Length: 281
Length: 261
Image (cartoon, rainbow over all chains, first blue to last red; front, side, top):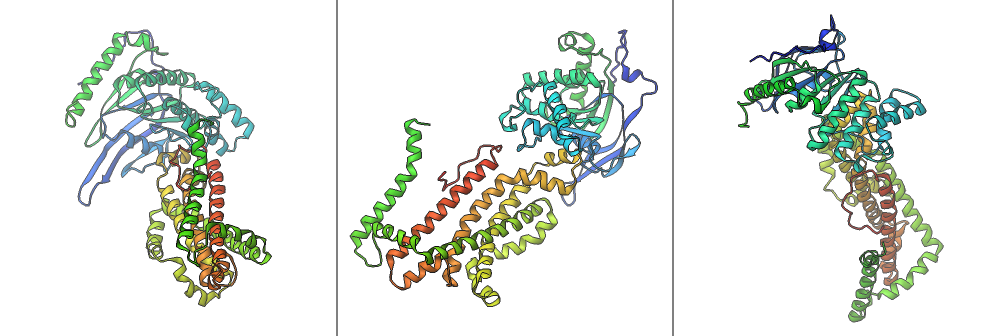
């Protein structure tokens, strides 16, 4: 099944229309095999190739167990692939680095640091002067909507606030690519929606490249330029769908837009197909 | 803070102490045994001990050995425990060694250590060191093992080297657990301090206690027990204050038993 994006609007996607769009990340025939027991191997990822263009917001969508987070960890350099390679701007990725900033579902904040301490951590590690790092961090904290919480510890914050801190902490060391691993997966529906809106607003300021893992179809369509649909067992790329919807996107407009609705319906159908081998849902 | 229940909670430990002394007093009067002085007799003997310069020197010598043994144990055990918690190879190497040492009462090693190192400070400090090390290693190990992988990844993405991650992420993240181990270690330091002085009598609080026992000065014996107990409670209370300050950021934990602060 093929999703045909409707190109009826006068708006042109700056990412897909740039000729030629420059690739920032190239995933080249990556496979990942985990040994689950002495004799059985679990193929988490099988022969994944994908090119991510600079400035694009790309979502990796798929049912749980399709290896989408593993793929993100490989791009982050946190996990080494069994075979294949990932290149960033032509350079092979061999480990984590400040050019790729992760944001995890589990927030992974440093609980012994205040909000300000967490956000300043990256810049201080990169030897930015304390006063400068603090000024930048305070601005970022304000940008993610947490002004007034600078001296709070993570345990004093709600889940949504923690994820805002985590985003600010990662943005603070200016990664070229944001790697977001189901960042809103642990949040309630309302908080999730608000963070999606705020993420888009922040993203539209500087259009960093984002690789965004999710299992929510409308989240993927709402945020992305491109949705990479994966199937599971083994994890493969089923389809890459360009989302041709105008930006800046406003949720209230988009939800009424038939093109948005069609993307969601079509991709949901595809999701059901790839997931039917697993649960009955 | 001043609600009746809060007031009762604050006063409860004092009532427990008074209750214990009362039971002691009554039991001693009822038994009329020469080797079991009353609580009041024992308490009366305390100023004599604390007023005696010789005794004070002994007690301070004990505390000094305890502080040194505890300090070295903590300095060695925390890095070792953290390394074990983050490296399977290091854990696989040290685990069997620790399993062998673990069930051995450290005081039982004293005669052997005495043969090598004599009956002096080094032997006793070493025994205290051994007594403190295991719980501190164990808790540091558990704390380091439990550190969230994603937290370390976040650090790695910021450019922290493996050593920097160990010192700047694993250490603070495991600190609540490490300090729990240190608290247990502190109590064990006091216990091994007294037992070491029981075996190698030369000086110290244990020496006063067991000399008095030999000479049948039972009020002194019980007074020393009270003094040692009070030292334990004070050390623990001070440590708990420090601990609570250091891990203010931590999730609220269950209050430990023996909390007098």
